[in-house]
Length: 74
Image (cartoon, rainbow, N blue to C red; front, side, top):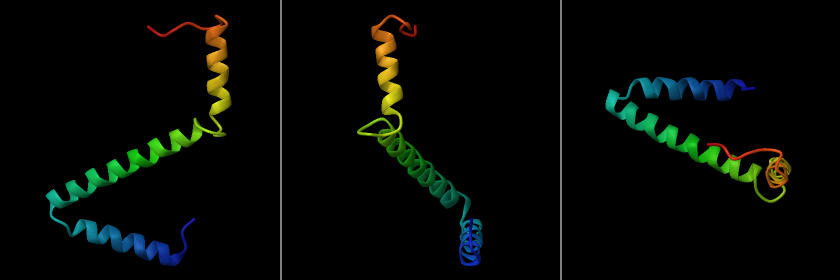
């Protein structure tokens, strides 16, 4: 949940973005997408490494495959 200061900042950012020329907005959009993809990759890596929450699921899938309870996708 945002407090009033965060909302003012977000509104200012939105206004600043709208004041950019279209090509600069496109560059900014590209940068934001890249940043979001990096964040997603980092989250997935954390989920499926070490003691991440996805490790147990991954281990179960490997065991099921090894024991013949599932097949390789084609």
